[in-house]
Image 1 (cartoon, one colour):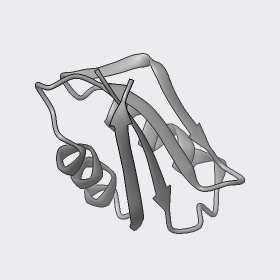
Image 2: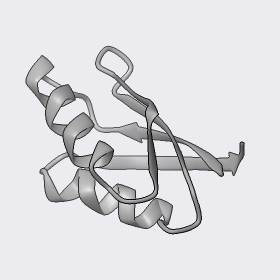
Image 3: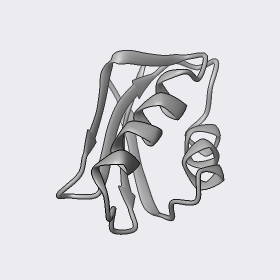
Length: 76
């Protein structure tokens, strides 16, 4: 299991948070219980296993139209 912190471009509305939670939470390999989208910090924290990569998670966020500034991954 790996733990990621993903810094996003500034989120402008609370509905953005729900869209990101749904998109990332539905990805195979993501630990839904660990998923936290922080509106004020424009940050996502999530744990995931080796069936998915950080690039896949970033792409799911970017496909919604939200920019990813950087990601940090470490072993959980």
